[in-house]
Length: 251
Image 1: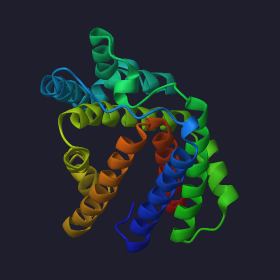
Image 2: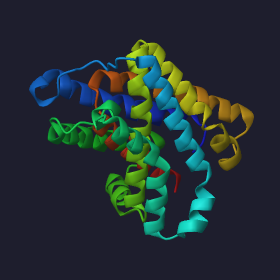
Image 3: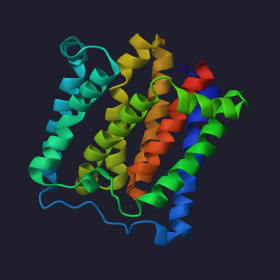
Image 4: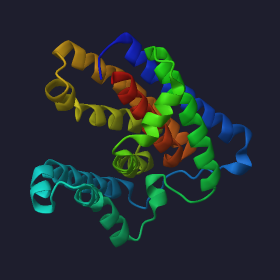
């Protein structure tokens, strides 16, 4: 990942195009999309506080990756177990409180249409991303996306990251208006990437700041889109393919 103008253009245009296609599907084919239901809890503030505590538990487990690796080993199966353990607080909370996955914006209602719309939009978004970066070998990108050595792991982690964001933002949408809720979560989400941008990726302070500002903006738009569509599945496909396009164009 590099803080270049072309890269940021690719991120914004690919996401905006993909979300636009999904939204058009929802708008012009309403029978193939679930009915909108505003997030509601009897005690939204208390529910959001619980969600924050669950998220903190998830973060704590995430920081214990090396301990889990030493405990479970480094193979593919152990990686899957580690990632499931890290995200387990969400599912434990849902089970204990008898809440559905729909409170994370995941629903089986009309799922076939959401998958088709999301996959189609993702195929277009991936193409837009690599074209803006300057790579025209779309078949090679598709092979890379599907034949990546860790494609199963990438899909699982991308999906669970979406569940974590959906879990928190659904509850914040029940408490605040969508614009303020989206902004708060976008800022929190991107502040969590400071170490990744500076230490792990080696960006200077200015480059990291540009990335944080730019990606806070697109995260804000994605969360507003999530509020409009109430569907994490189509976003999962977009996230997966755009991440893959970023990796493909940096190889």
